[in-house]
Length: 313
Ligand code: GH3
Ligand code: MG
Ligand code: MG
Image (cartoon, rainbow, N blue to C red; front, side, top):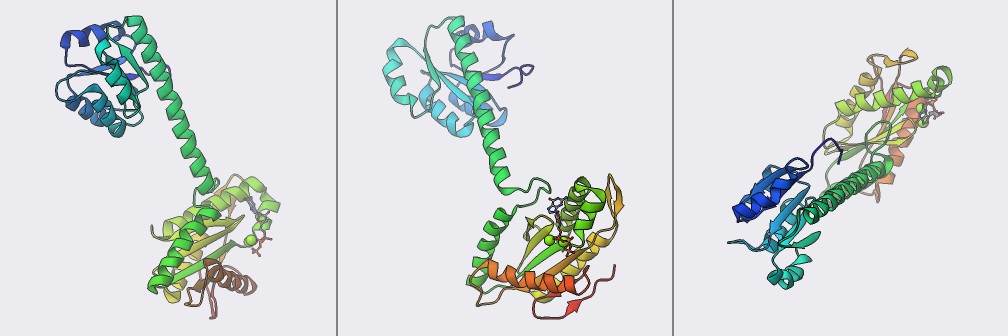
């Protein structure tokens, strides 16, 4: 947690006097909030969080501290939990500690120093756990998202695509695949440099993304190649969509640091056949059609097993 932000701490005790004694020494150091019973505590954890730490007394009318912290672990899983017990409840408390995944328990009465040390440790734990969670999300994203364009990477495209392929095959629903490849892209790199090339790939991905529906699957297949799966769409409509994509890319030059660069894309389309045993089979036909589109002059769409569709910008 950044040092200039005071950690939010919730202290729960039914005894007002004790609550005041407990919070008074720390008013300056922490952003303290209090609750008088378990119900109020859960409400605050759910609605007024995130809290870094919740400290609960063991003995309260209605719900015990262990039960409260067990609920808190569900309501606000990231909040670190501390239990306060009287000497007589230590046994009960230790039994409940695993269930509530309690970070630490303190026996009452405890000094301000002991409490401060426990709060500081808990806040540190909260920070470490948030760092871990952030790192996990970042790693997950790295595994699935193409860094340059922010769209699905090849791996993710195949995962989602295979699922869609299975569904379409099982229910005999239409599905179309597209392979897209930037035209003469090597020239962009050779003439204007790799950075300009990267900017072009990024902008083309964005133009295509904007033309697709949420349900369509769009991934960066390789360098300057993209793949699309159109869900519930047959060849004829896929050809319309592809023509629109070609036009959207060619509509205006891409602005780069090397100046505005006119860019076009060629697209090959195929549709799901009942005999296809994998998504790769569908994509292989789209790739053949793409090859035909390139051979036919680029900036155009070709459908596997049919005629070239001319694009007029
Ligand atoms: P065609 O119209 O036949 O597709 O011609 P092309 O020049 O686009 O075809 P080719 O496949 O020969 O060239 C693709 C180039 O894309 C080669 C490679 O240097 C470049 N490239 C691949 N990935 C990236 C990337 O991530 N960034 C940049 N800037 N260039 C890339
Ligand atoms: Mg290529
Ligand atoms: Mg190319």
